[in-house]
Length: 186
Image (cartoon, rainbow, N blue to C red):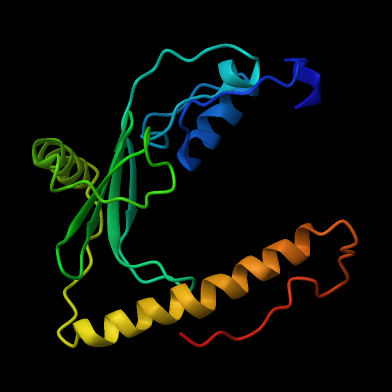
């Protein structure tokens, strides 16, 4: 936001999409309505180049499959820890983002107490917000799920990354259908 004149400052403060609404309201000098605004905080101080002293967990709830490989899951990030709960099989993964920002090493076996604390907090939040929960799929098949996962990792994601790099190329010139709308098959 050029009008802020914050000198192009950078921040490593964790934010989430639900922060956009209160931020926009704050810039417009409009009070948030409690029935509309239950998640998120205003990021106006960060955008003005100031520090945020708020410590808060971030939550994601994704109770369905996604067309780019997402599985039904719920996630909590608190400070440098991130716990992912997968709904199909009830498994969980734990990552220490300070040491592993790319989430390559699941450390749940080394830190079971942290995982238990975060899982309890995550499930409490889901109850508190009345989250829609996924239903168990009676036809779920571990073997087919693994094949789907492998196809996503080895085919879909590389294709999406190639497309992203094409869009970011210096010589890219969008035309009327640059999104390349097409039917996908999962």
